Amino acid sequence: MIALKNSTLSRKVNSYALLLIMTVIAAGMLIPFLLVIINAFKTPAEYAAAGPLSLPKSLYLGGIIEFWKRVSFEKSLLNSFVISFSVSVIALILSCLNAFVLGIGKIKGRAVLLVLFIIANTLPQEALAYPLYYMAKLFKIYDTQLVVILIFSVIQSAFGTYLLSSVYSRFPVEIIEAARVDGCSKFEMLIYIILPNSKASLSVLFTFFFIWTWNEFFLPLIMLVSKAKQTVPIAVSITQGQHNMDVTMASASAMLGIIPCIIFFVIFQRTLTRGVTAGSVK
Amino acid sequence: MSDSQKKGYLPFLIPGIIFFLIIIAVPFAMNVFISFTKWTGVGTPDFIGFGNYIKILSDTVFWISFRNNIIMILAVTVIPTILGLIFAVILFDHISAYFGLKTVNLIRSGIYLPQIMPIAIAGVVWGWILNPGFGVLNWILEAVNLGNLAHNWLGDAKTALPTIMFIMVWFQIGYPLVIFMSAMQRIDPELMEAASLDGAGWLERLKITIYMIRPEIMVVVLTTTIASLKLFAQIFVLTRGGPGNATLVPSYFAYQNFFEKARVGYGATISTIMTIIIVILTIIFIKTQLKFEKEESA
Figure 1: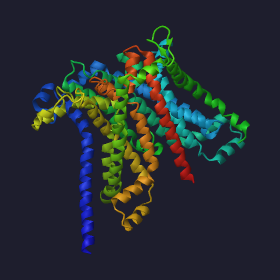
Figure 2: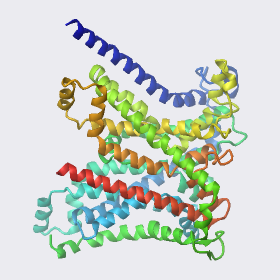
Figure 3: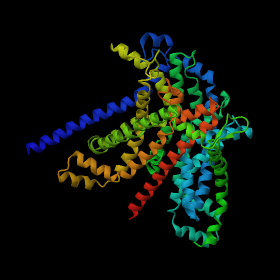
Figure 4: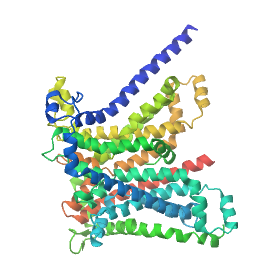
């Protein structure tokens, strides 16, 4: 009896110790975010005098405003939003069309096509970068949002095709047969039967496409050279290391880069966790 | 369905195929072709056969970048997978039993948070913390009288790569954690109880867990290995491959050859080699996915 009590007690002590450790780790993960945020609101003089760990004495917005003006941050936000939103819409349409053929139609050679789409999605972007850059210049769409939208619509839809095809391949055959017997055309079947019945997967994909595109770096860096066209990650990161950028302005810039992501996280948290675990692919 | 019924589907594939050809297939084929040439990006490329490939075999800079990338797999795949597994077991088995799901979700969200950011922004955050002039880390070290430890973390060839690896562990760890925790929900709790009654210690229980969630472990290992071979943004933001070539990785080396050194053919060679490795990993990934699906349905 006593031994049993001891073991439950020690299990309890153990659990508290583990809780403490995990809480410290989780808090430690957040420290970089906290440091960036508290220092974004300090004057450089306050930073120099009191160091990075104290809370700001007053909310100084000078660093944030100065950085905002320097990169025209409202333009970066708008660019990122327009690009990510357009990509999500186009990629979703392409994914649905492809998956309709591969998952529902189950045409010959679909396995090969699926493998091609997966490879298209995992391909390193540097293996496409120079020809895309060259073609963009040739067709005079270099340094436009259009070229970035086109490229990522295809790259994201490659993943979407893979995921949706597997969802659609499990679509009840009876419903498809019934629709066919009722004289439903393929197009009507897609619009009125398949799409309404896969809303959950479509919303997960839309969210992922949006955030992935927002976070992209390599190809937007190459394609968008003028300041007025750049996305948030590019605008924030290429201003780093400019010699007239002071310490608190640098933290303000990092904070401005983080805030949209935190907003997305809060809005999409449920869809995201559902998606990460359902597709278990990033 | 008969073949004639299946035919009706093909027109829906046309937009997807056209886009695929223009954005992926043609540029990729061009890149492979360019890798067999010497080209500055203007004028006509000179066909030189396997010249670039022969040159790359003895190019120490390429091999340094390749070695750095292999080391990076430790920080992107190996360490996060192991830590993610340990954290998932602790949260799932111990903390949720005593403190409830809310506590678990809060801790999980905290650890996952870095994952939601663009890696470039994560680079900006850490570049600011590690800045040799005004950075937080050196300030703290000075404040606790460890000033002699303070130095230019990213500017010293000895510490640059380990520092970036540390940042990558911080960035990556939420991904395996979230996947493993959801995978563990599949495990029948009775299985674990039965094992405990049979006197299984934590090690045996861990072994059972690993066995049960091995499909997800494979997914994490392969997807993160592929991701680690594409590392670019954090190198661009934090070190530009330096100091020297201490943090150079192939994707950045290819970028330099394309856009800074005007050695387009050589850049195409580097990226073609990386593509071959990634495609092999992708095929392994697909094969294991199919294998697990078969086992599931069997």
